[in-house]
Image (tube, rainbow, N blue to C red):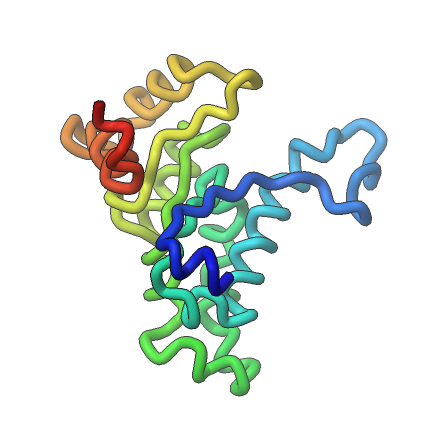
Amino acid sequence: MEELNRRKVVVYTHPTAANCCGNLQAKVPPVMIEYGTDTTRAIASVLFEGNSRRFRDIRWIFSHAGGTMPFLIERFVRHPLLVPSAAPLFPDGVAAELRRFYYDTAQTPNAAAMSALTKVVATSQIVLGTDFPYRTALDHVKGLRDCGVFNEAELRMIERDTPLALLPRLRA
């Protein structure tokens, strides 16, 4: 983490199914539930192990609109109240830390997911994601445009401006 922070890197995370959870339901593939849960687990790890607070120059991108985190936001925010030893990690609160992260739109270009995510973070923290080859970029762009959550300026931010701000060498 120290080296990532020193280099001021952008860290993109993508989930998988944890070893414990690969075959929990025979007719439900892990990608359906476990990937969102794994993303949420990664966010919780970065937060509650103190890495987001200690390493301020790492810019984190979490897949799939933050997994289940937007739906579990109250549990995240209340954690320092329930575990007081965690409180020093969040002088501005857990929600402030979550708002610093970036979240992609892979597999989530729909009104329910995007509405939930925009209740947690500003549109400036959302970047286009596609999960190619499992879904196409066009499918995601269409989904974002059809979901009714974003105006044209916000769509431009998600599709171009924020990604270029994170990775300026791609401007060429």
